[in-house]
Length: 258
Image (tube, rainbow, N blue to C red; front, side):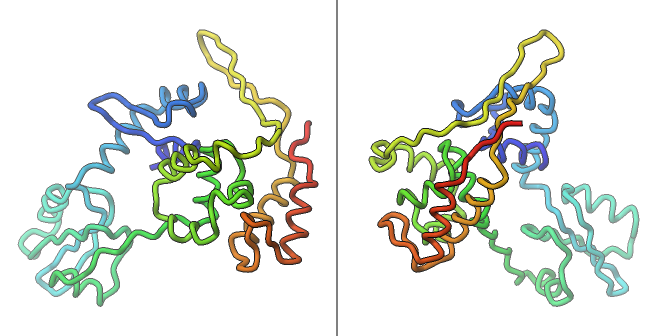
């Protein structure tokens, strides 16, 4: 899912309506994103179709007459898997069992459960807070530490909402009175400019970028707020370490120019 992963990192989701691609949210689509979609349209459509195809299964068990069970891995239609298995094993093939929900080989105990129909589908693991929180912040055009400092998200939200859609979370925060009436921060942001030409299209990046010191201060501050029970950013309560990290974050210059 490499092509879809690129859009996810850009804070976008893709939907397939017939043969048309639709990206959301529309106000976050840049010229660079449009160029990427044009170049990778075929890959994006294939990945979306694969994700929505219920006949595809990553793992199949081939049960042979000699007692062996072969684990066939890869996103392949079950009917095609059966056809290829019969071609390869002939009359020694007793059964082909699809194992949905797994993208790894099974242990011997799991194979037994899969064959008798008692193997439970694994629950999807929630996105780690170290990835989930920055995605929400990016959709809102701010930084993770700001969301925690101003009380738009609490530390317990990072666990309770870890499997929630980041777009829905960001939209909920965006229309909340606390967000609408928040004090405005004056920060410079790196801009992406595009030079319009017939062919090829070039993307020119400005020299301004987040400094290494600021990134380190931001990460240290955010990680501490997420893990420290004594700190509560919404009420301004910090442990001694939290006070030092917050002061370092506020005093560190965000951008540098090359």
